Length: 116
Length: 107
Image 1 (cartoon, helix red, strand yellow):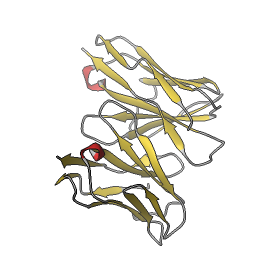
Image 2 (cartoon, one colour):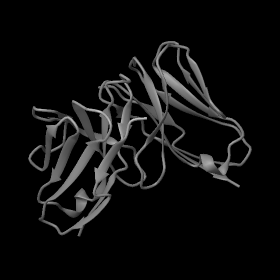
Image 3 (tube, chains in turn cyan, brown):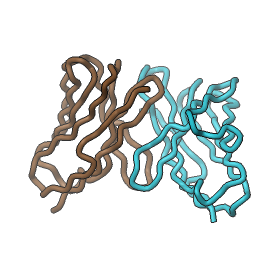
Image 4 (cartoon, one colour):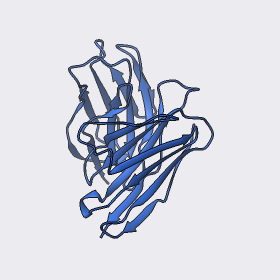
């Protein structure tokens, strides 16, 4: 199946700093990628849809100025958490839809963010 | 807004027993997916159901899509400790996840 990678897998940052998370589709081109957040013992919550070459679409309640998304190429989307706070600590997961298979999405391994 | 509710939220059973997890919605979905997630990892796709009434089998796992395409179920036969994990149903054009079922199989 299709492969999606994320980097880094774990990151610790200090409160007030920014951190960037990368999501790459390794063997296919993805015009659309998705970013999710997952708190402990909860399900995944969709944050935003990342569109190659255009602005991301954010879900209700997600601050676009705090979670900056850039989809600069067909294989790379980045999520930057700006001015991080401890409550931003979470597991961030990206996914991409493989156009070769239609409706199926493949997920990255996730990035554990801890803000101290 | 499309919502997916899963039940039960938690399930702890003995190895060898059977179990069923349900995924329900008031909305119609063109397809539903089932994922399994291990701690600290991304979800892994198990199956996609597309046709109302469809039944798919994956070894000891049986997936069914409701006739009206509003619900789905996952049945595990003779559960094993390796089946332990978080099971998620999902659907929609931008994949929306259900609330999840955390399954624990005791040896």
